[in-house]
Amino acid sequence: MDFNISTGKVHTAVKTVIYGAEGIGKTTLAAQFPSPLFIDTEGSTKQLDVARLPAPSSWEMLLQELDFVISKRPCATLVIDTVDWAEQLCIADLCAKNGKSGIEDFGYGKGWEFEKESFGKFLNKLTEVINAGINVTLTAHAALRKFEQPDEMGSYDRWEMKLGSKTTNKISPLIKEWADIVLFCNYKTVVVQTDKDGKKHKAQGNRRVMYTQHHPCWDAKNRYGLPEEIPMEYAQIAQIYAPVQPLETPPAPATSTSATDIQPGIPQSLADLMAASGITEQQIRAAVAMKGYVPEDMPIRAYPEDFVSGVLVGAWKQIVDFINEQKYPF
Image (cartoon, rainbow, N blue to C red):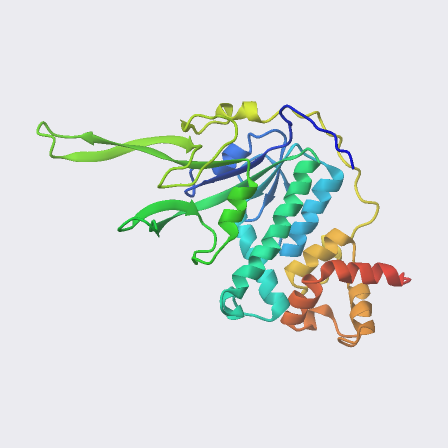
């Protein structure tokens, strides 16, 4: 079998991670990327004039929004703000599907392994967004944690992404490996002398900076030859992101279920998926009755909570496929 050999740099969309303390301006920075579209998992874009998709109320809804971006290509940059809140959706989905009250209930670190597998598929989906020519930017909060080097005595504080705090958590390394550029944002602090004898000092400084290379006290990286420390301004990294041709606004779906068509009492996570997929309560009730779960005359608001989260929301794609296959005359 013969293969073509190519040389030179390959220009692709960029995978970016921006993390730092709350309130430092991660979302504002991400809003300056080329034609951004936000998936706002925590409501941090309310004061910004940006394009955004509905806040995902479930892991399944988040994945469906990624499929929408891949197929419609409505932006030049997709921003997940924040990925640590997205991780909580992933954990809630795993627990609901497996009848667990928390990730530790799986026992012996199995929960974290299941999360790693599920989150890895999420990153693969984001890579599909990249392959569609769309930049992906993930924002995350930062947290100070004690760190011990295996070959050193003692421990010290270092900044890490505020993901699972257990030592067995594997999500942060996955994200850092996946990214092309990891930026740690922090305030530049300078210690100055306050007396003549040099015995008194104070810390001052409120200049925001971005660190682009690894340091014992934080993780960062870049593949673009950036200086180790740069001002927290988009202009400092703008050259990395190639100009994007204007994208046409995709046509609206021919049919959909309005939020006003959803009956009161239906859990929000399910109502959001119903509205996005154009599925009615009557269709769901008929489908679950055919499967033998509950009587067709039982309203969704009366369904057990674990049935809604684990069977309906947790297996939404299969539910929609089953409904479409039946071709009900609704």
